[in-house]
Image 1 (cartoon, helix red, strand yellow):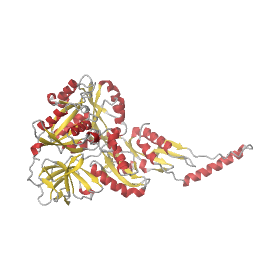
Image 2 (tube, helix red, strand yellow):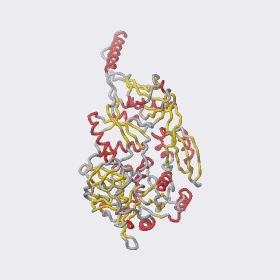
Image 3 (tube, helix red, strand yellow):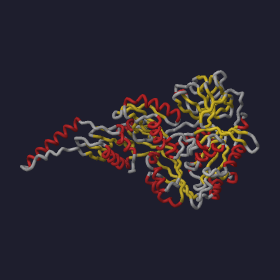
Image 4 (cartoon, helix red, strand yellow):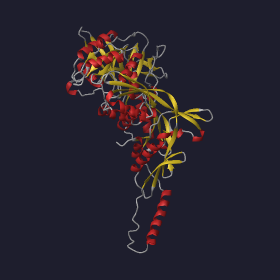
Length: 600
């Protein structure tokens, strides 16, 4: 198809503003699936996406559309996630498109991620079409939404389209706007092949399926292609487009979005963001890639059974192919054996990876407590970065430490303002700005430590604001902090997998919570099990798992008290000897309990 009849666009918005529902309506309109086979969230093909009602993976689909002037267009849609943890997915989708539908909820207006995603689209020079969704809702306030588009986004509200994705209102006008307002892709079919890999997935029968956007040239079966990052050469077996299923075509040319198979079995050869070119007549330089992914949360993954280490390694390789923001390296622990130290984009990302490993790859895994990357100044003048408590130097060598800070933006209705400020101050936040967007909404700017946002901040924010507050953040810089290593000692032996790096003033509360959690999770033994939280040699918290005791006084039905004492002392000696040789096994639930900070 000639490039003037191709449109590549994505849907971007804040979480829960109706991206997946709008994609459903566009697919139905394009007759890609029969009504009897249709299901909601049709592009969300993971169980976890359907259960949580969120999009985790960007999904591409090609929709045919006949416009009012009779021309047949090929619309390549990329649906994107909305949660702040998956901004990297959004940036990858945006770099493969020329236009974006910016979705605004008529009941909630412009939110934090709406702004963030719009700036991302502007960085890539995308044509932005504002779309006001949920106009059929009783609480919809269209004039207010238009006002916010003018004032907060700096876009023309007169060009905004009114739709209801749920009811299918305004979909025809939206199709026409996509065709008329989004530019056609540039690029020549006769130029050397230049295609951008924006995603991949692994097929156990056919190898790696490479998702790409062709910018120049053409790609077809039998052609030899080269990955420019590592020089690997493969012969193309199949090319095609996404029409919910993979549909084979003869070739893909400039402007097309599709996939190719080349029998790639070495998963590490394919890198998202890489450029594919023809091996015989390569292009001169690679396409500008995506921005580098910067993990902000670090946690170690260990197999429950140490014999499953190799399987876990293979599973992570395949998962990395499908989730380019996952970063990992080998790690080991005295308590848990061999595993991997992983970097994530946020706590939701950690949960999603854990569930995907268990569901898609049947891996039983243990995650250690999450941490951020600290900068530690040593007395000898060296600076080192530490994200693993096991790598933290001895107290005597440490001069000081710094932790990463974020600039957070919270947009909330005025009603919840006081409680949200209290929450941010409790999390060591410093207010930098407060501006009233209108009479009902206010934007708060806080500088706060990233470590404080990791655990329960997002959940508590949603709870306080009844789901109406939106949250977005950017990493800014490092600031001095009082950092200590909290060790958990079980039966006199430190458990390295439970060690944590914490802010000194929070160490006591954190140690107490962890000890209480472990006390409830560790099964009782024949001997007393002390659980202690320590900073260096100082014990700051303690709980005890009481032993199972045999009633040794049952046979004493009278007589002197000294006889009873003698029996109890004899039992105590036996318990003491048992404790010296006894081993305490930590159940998997104990490690999971440490990750939670509040009662659920």
